[in-house]
Length: 611
Image (spheres, one colour):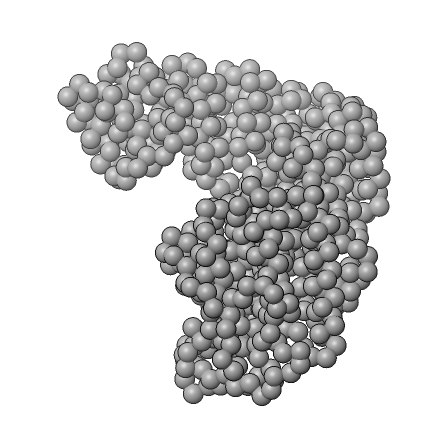
């Protein structure tokens, strides 16, 4: 359904509609009425003008608002009202529901003919039930509080219908589903219970179970869902619902028993497979369950519906669903300088040893007046790459660092700024999103790593501006994901993308090390064939970190440990090493609810939490 670029107020659209009608140009008048309806769908003057237009047409005006592939929402709603006026209210309701699906927060149905008791008497109860089910399918479950008022007319229709057809099981169940979505849980239970008493059925028990579950009445919910299984033992979606309900209430072993029963009947049933992997990951935290789920999703693109289990498990977890915040004295100094807005004048950061190059470049860019003083350069020298035979991003001058590669092009900067974000649903989704960088050449990609551009002048950019180090890490992570799309026609083992990422992984200890290793781990998530190679790289790099950490601090050790724990097919010894490193040097997760970093993360990940 299309939007309209016009932004005239509804009153002006109506004035233009009247002028067009006076001139006999009903087609243009219809366009203006549709535009007014899109802006003010319940305004009486709009409906008066629509009625006048219908009268002028002579045929009821319905065909002045034809449906086509990209129909304007205002035209769809106008046609709905005219169909109702022509004695075809069920067809009109279908169109209003389509508009609700397009913009759920708009009160498309808030008109007298929808809420009038006579409508329920004119409609067959089966048809009303289907309409209510269409509404339920068009809105989130539960509906956001801010959007519930727009659903009130449909709930009024449901009330009227169950008054007229008090023993119609399907209608009562569909009405219950709508009531539950808008927070009328007690009403939902009452209607669903009436429905199963009038006409016992599987779907009726499912609706009753959902209503009980929304009320927190878990025992009754499980009993109703159990009766649904008795009605139809082959509906494995109900098994998954029971398992999810049990898991939500801490009964994980029972939940897995139900999932195992479902999988015994059909090992490929998507709802059961998704729930099984999610619950097994909840039980033991083994990332292998999530990788197996990602494999299933890739191999079964035609699932019955979209699932959120993988994203739910990855949300908020280091590298599975978000970049880890940087740590260290330099980063804290930058954050404090930005918060205090003093520009670093007269301030200094005292370091025991050189910080990662990306951290030093961030402080030099954001607070150039702040001095950085390094007390010592320990061994092994953190300014030296861990393997010396690869390309280098940085050049050191004592304890100061400058990029060793040219700056990226304006086009590369623009594309990167459209993509970079500190959170993603899961690694395969991040890989897919980074395809927008596929056509950038290698020089541009390397330039982005060493010359991170400013954050974009968007709402996201303004939030990220509160922590410049986080924006730099976003740039580097997404750039390395872009490297995964570089020359994908080359076989992985001999490819330029693998070679460049390895150079970065084994370069100096830096944020780009983490970004490059995350890209390799992501490659292993999306391509099972590269998993042994990536697992070997991760194991070798983590072993090197552990060896160096025995003689001096390694600033990126904790983050690399969490990266290893996100890697597929890792051997048990490396998993144990990663677990110990991660426990000894936990990734920062501010506990103070009022802390700046905590507030920043809440704002940045809010869009990924919305249903």
